[in-house]
Image (tube, rainbow, N blue to C red; front, side):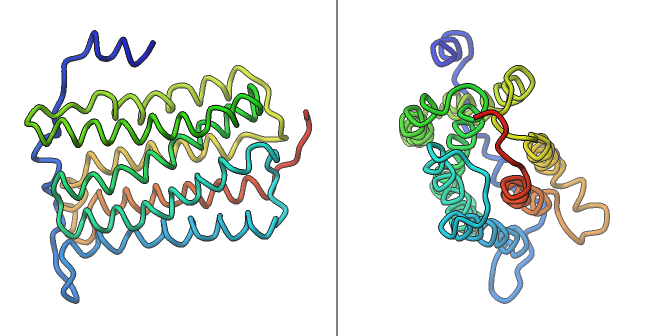
Amino acid sequence: MPIVAIFALVDAYPQPAEYHLFADTRKFFGIPNFWNVVSNALFLVFGFAGLILLRANARLAILSRLKPACYVLFFGILLTAFGSTWFHLGPNNDTLFWDRLPMTIAFMPLFTLIYGEHVSARWARRLLWPLILVGTASVIYWDYTESIGSGDLRLYGLVQFLPLLLIPFMLLTYPSAFSTTRFYWLAIALYGFAKVFEQLDGQIYALGGIISGHSLKHVTASLVPLVLIKGFRTRRLVNR
């Protein structure tokens, strides 16, 4: 129903050309847009750390049915490091495709994980791959529409922002299988700050020419997997 509604009520929206114009374009060590590129390293570090901890069963409180979602989540975060790096080396719609694709691979399992912990772990496991397929399709659809000159971000926007509305609803409405959900709220807050930094890219860079809002976006967003890891290690199962 949300997909039908967005296509019925919202006009097609192409990718704005100015999206690729970042405030900090400084080049160091032969790397263009240096800080926007290297600030992706934390996605690689924390994504890899999450996968290692899952593999080692390092006291992570995760429902067994939802472990596949966690693996895909941290794998998507790891891939985001490569996709975002590729995009920022040469910002354009073609490279943006590879930036957005791994992000949707991370968004969908996070939503599935929280749904499984609060509503139904059985259904969450069934929904994982269909939702990842929808997320992937949203990026492919946007890329295709851009290629034929009628760019349409509606489906991608739905995939990115609808979970941000549904996750707080689930956290507030349904009991958790675990002792705490505070780290999920912190993760949401960090992502919110990251989006604010993204919008204030030039204004933050103008404060002293040290770091841009977009680089701060990367650093702030990359702390989300660290918060998740910490939460998985400190909570305990209480309801299932």
